[in-house]
Length: 71
Image (cartoon, rainbow, N blue to C red; front, side, top):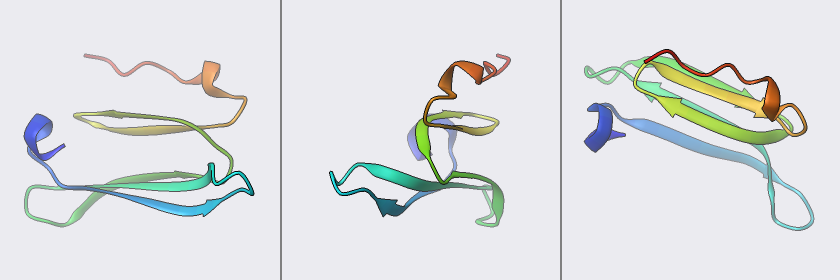
């Protein structure tokens, strides 16, 4: 993200299931000055999309309901 968009991000794995698959995830995006810009999280993680303007996380089984970011 720093190379692509010039901002710091943090990805936190909150929990995993018995198979060690991620089940709960939080994504935090920071502004250039280091303050938090936005975050998104899921307690039944399915898919994460990150763009220059933010992030989206879909719960498992609901990935097809994600709305594409405008370019």
